[in-house]
Image (tube, rainbow, N blue to C red):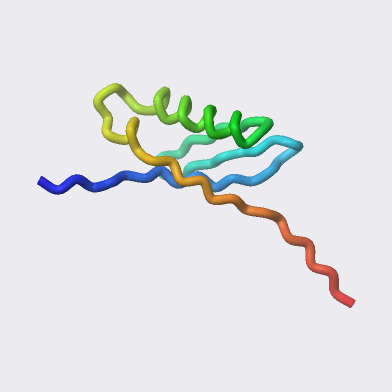
Length: 74
């Protein structure tokens, strides 16, 4: 039997002073004021979103941070 490591991918961006984490598959999102709070909220989201016994409850969460870049042209 082969064990396949499962990951849930979250795109993280800043919005109105909050860090927002959005997972597209499955569709779910959360937010936090600090990185530490965001990490805790992602953990809680995963536990609440999936039923007990669902392997995704123990999946790794990968956070992808996106920063908005402003380009100046002269």
